[in-house]
Length: 634
Ligand code: BF8
Ligand code: SF4
Image (tube, rainbow, N blue to C red; front, top):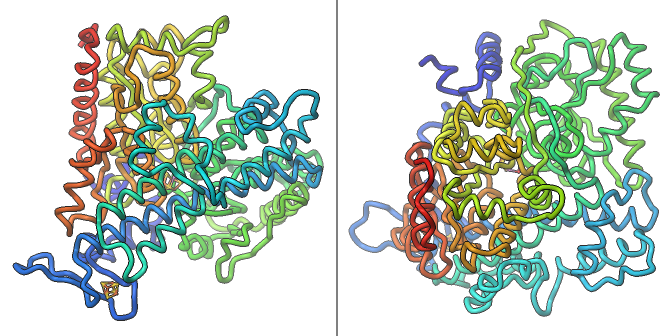
């Protein structure tokens, strides 16, 4: 295996890595190598910088119990550091949810032309859930009151937020009895920061249980708000064809890349890119038109709703610029490498930041305001067109681009699996009960140069479908699988077990279902709840033959996601450990003891095949407990 094969399994990425090497342009992989050896204290989670008596570190090999200057033990330090990671991730997702709520409010008040209410059915359903009167009112009036009510969820001071009550009754009871029902979305994050301040919570279990509550305020709060309100504003996805990989960049069109997370930016750019004025301008500059593509989760948002091509996932952001064909890359928030400006400086690529929360030294900033969204989107597109004639040097675009089907949601799975006459999860539940399908798995999360790019996502998904496990994917995992052609219905015949094959053939779906961006992991929570409500597979999510994984995780958001899945009762495998191995107690609590409390727990396994088998074993254990029939074909 040569160097580039060790770095990525994806041919398009290998092609670009070759260019990077030839032209001495550094990428995340080079910076990762230069960083070796990485700090052992940091890796084990036993370095504390929380107050200025420190920094303190615990010697992992010491015979006696060491503490920080304040007396904090390794258990406390490790739990505090992890708790703050959960808070960071929950904050990112939830602040995204808040921005979408703000956009809904502006749309309802008629303060922006760029957004209108596109899914009235979902709006009314959510309004009823929030006690907003629907009858005899216009959609804007309903949306205004609903947006205000959801805004209150962020700062709620009394009672609990509403969305967690969607979970199965038994699960809600577990949360209530443990005292981890989320109260306010912002409140849990603030409380985590408070508890982990010098001299507050010392009990690692108490800190970690609050970690679960904080994560629940993300999965069943901020992220769920982001998903639901995005569906209302930008329309609910339906199965859609798309294309993926760096080969979606075009030689003769103006290439505009949107990168980041919030569809408030990317969705409006989709419309602006089709504006006749913009297309005409592009042609005047000698281009055939505008080629809009996405990177990371904002790409997933516009793929799911418009079929816009995805140029790549997290580790491909620098590689896209390395083609020399990106005329402009606009970014909003999250997962945007600060290194982009350095890579862009070797090419003609214009980098534009758009969020007041994310500026970069020396990078053009065009502030995005929802009230003027369309005009700002056009302004940025014009900058891209102006930059098209400045292409210099060789344009090197890899050929690779694959077809895919995306656009699955917790709601439309009803129609797909249940036929159009009666929307129901019955066929899905029956397939599991009768043993045609072994169970379900969610494979999600990032890329990380510690693991060969895309390798763990793809191998894990293949192993799961081979064993008749239907796989749902989001975020960078979905993009990885798409690049390996796993999101095409035909691959069921190549890779899936016989039972799963039969289902895919009958309903025409791929064995790996793309359900959206990282905030859309909330769709998985709802789908699991729907399976419980349909009946025959237990009373709680923790009864279900399901498992989750984040095989190449890197971000704090992934930590929060993993925490809310475990808190919801799902066994979750991570491809690399949390930075907690410096505390045996914390590791044992999260990877073992917590199962008795929450019904879910964590496991760490870097080999994706072994990890898939940990998931399969768990699924089989749950099948046995439910006394389900033996599998039909395995
Ligand atoms: O929110 S999977 S690298 S892009 S954090 Fe980031 Fe991870 Fe990708 Fe989307 Ni999610
Ligand atoms: Fe050290 Fe305690 Fe301060 Fe952390 S909080 S830096 S362990 S003194």
